[in-house]
Length: 451
Length: 111
Image (cartoon, rainbow over all chains, first blue to last red; front, top):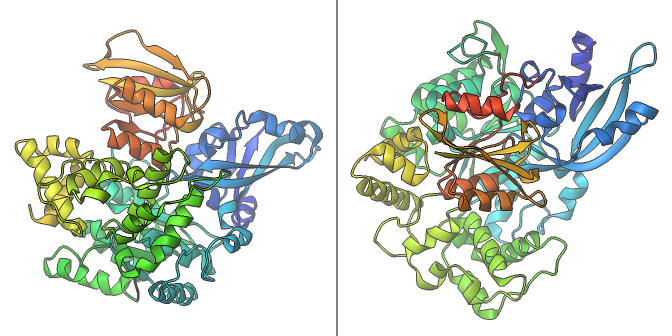
C-alpha cells in the first residue's frame, strides 16, 4: 500500500508534512514536506520508530494513538518537534486511523501543521503592519515594502547586511509572503560543512557515490522543491560549487552526486551575505556570473546603529519573549541609556543576547546597569565577546589587544584567528580547536582574510 | 576522551532536552577505558544535561536531536557534539570506537 504511486502524489499534494506509520508506529511513508521538515528521506526512514525521526515532545508517543487504534477516532494534539535546523517548531499533530479494505486499522496518518506559520500568529506579531518585523524606523519601512514586492515574484534575491541584522529572518518573511509559502523553506549554511560534504548536502547523492554512501540521500534542492532555498552566507560557497550552482540556476535541473539522471529543480533561490562580493570577485574568490545571476533583486538591511530608534522597541520585544507567562521586568533609566548609546557591532542578535543576559542576572526583577554585560560599561572588546558571544560564536574570548567599540566584525574575526594561531604556535589544527571550528572552516577563513 | 551519550532505554535518546538519562564513558585508543557510569536526572532538562557535561569534563556528547541553543552552548564550552544519531547507543559507541560515527547517522539495527 505504501508503495502505491497514486498515494505518493496524493500525499505530496497535501500542504502540510504527512507521515504514515504502521501499528508499531514505525515510519511507512513520508511526503515531501515531511522529508523537508525532518531532513530525512523516505529511503532512510522506512521502518524506523516515527518519534525518533519526528523528535517530538509528545512523549511517550504511543498513548497518543490509543483512541486512534482502538476506537478509530481522529485526534489532535499540540506539541513541538525539533527540525533539521535544530529549531523547536510548534506543531499541531492530527492523527487519523488508516484502515485496510477489510476495515482493520493497519496504521495511522499523522498530519503535522506548523503553527509558527499560521496567519493568526503572524497577525499577533509586529507593530508596523508587516507581521514579525519589530520596527518604527523609516529604513525598515522601506525593507518591509521591498519584502512585499519581492514576495510577489520568483526572481532570485540577494540580501546584504552585517551579521546579526536579520538576513535569515527577512528571507523567511519573503518566503512566507510568497505563493511558495505552502512548500518548504530550506536554509543552507555553506560555512558549516567541509566542501566534499557540502556538494552532497546541496545536490544529494546516490548509494555508492562515495565511500560511506550506503543509501540515496536527497539534497537540499530536492527538499526545497516548489519552495525556497536560502544560502545564509553565499560567499562561503567554494568556487567549484559556485560553478555547479550557476549551472543548476541556468538549466533548472541538477544531477545528484554519482547519478546520471537529471532532476528538475523548482526552488526559488535567496542568498545572503555580509561580505563585499565585488571585492571578492576582483580577488577571484567569487564568480561574477553567479553574482549577476543572484543579484536580480537586491535588499540591503541597515545595521542597528543606523536605526537606533528601534532599540527600545526591540528591547521590549525581547524582554517579552524571554519572559513567557511571567511578569516582564522593567529596565531602569541608567540601563536604558547604556543600551541606547551602544553601537551594536553584532546588531539585533547582539541586542537579543544582551537582553537575555540581563534578564538571567536580574532574576526577573528590574534590570539595572549591573545586570548588563561588563563590556557595555567598559568598552573592552576582549571581555565583550566572552560572556555574550560565547554561545553564538565560540572562541571569541581573548581576541586581540586593541580596544575600541565600533569595530567591523571582519576585523575582529581576523584578530581572533591571528590570536589563536599565535597561541597555538602556528599549528592550524590546534588553532581550529581553540576557536571551536572545524579545520575546514578555519582554512576557508584563512583564505578569506589572506592570512 | 570522555564521552556523554544521552540515552533512552537501549537507544540514543531522540531529544536532548527531553532526556533524563546519560551514560558517561571514558574512551582511550579506541577502547572503553573504565566502567561506564549511568546518570539519571530527576526530570528532563537540556540545561541540566549541559551542566552535567561541563561538570563531568566531557569532551564529546552523542545525542539524537539537540536544539541550537544547547548545541552552541556546548560548542562554546569546547565540547564537541555528534547529533542526529538514531538507534542503539551500544552500536553508536561501537562505531565511535572505530572512528566511524558521524552526525545524522542511523546506526545498524535502528529499524
